[in-house]
Image (tube, rainbow over all chains, first blue to last red; front, side, top):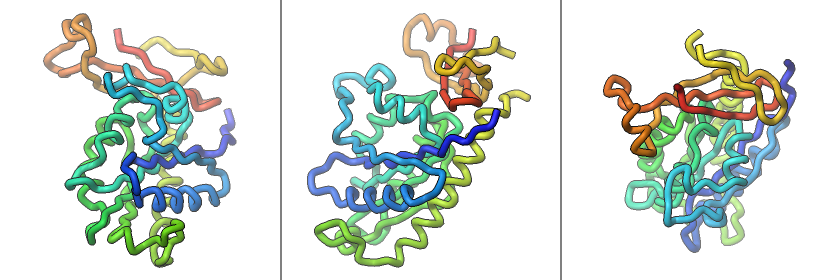
Length: 190
Length: 59
């Protein structure tokens, strides 16, 4: 069967914090993904998902988010670094699904106030993504000293970030395309 | 090989694409868990036609 559906690669904004600068990073990457031919996307904000916090895991699943994850071929996760870790709500949201992620591509955009650009949050998030069945790509985007990278309207002030974002998206699309074929046509165990 | 699965969305034959080790959610599942695997197998299927993902616990 031919599969000419466009790839679906949503961008998850992974923090609910007030005044978050990750919002600018997510909007920028989302816009760059949206420009790609053969790809559809959606910006998903963890702050607005109606996921309860008095339960956890698949019992707390939100139908619309689960449907988006089921349809997704890959994910961009925009994660600020909080005390060297990932935002608790991001983990809570990701944990509400499992089968929806398996053998799908994931890339992480790290964001930090300091010079490491979320390198530590990316390293901490990778084992979580692996256990969820996601396939991590080898390109990251690191927004170092994020307060100096965007103006108050979210306009990027340093265009040297764009080539790296584009390489990241190139790799994510390659992995998402390849894994879609594998999911559809390659049986496990031969 | 596990029994096949038809896509609930479009009816196409789904591909058994993964076996994921998951952790028991109930006492009953915990009793079925084997020490060798340290978990339970979730069989994951993908539809080659519409992309739908479904899964079920292995028997």
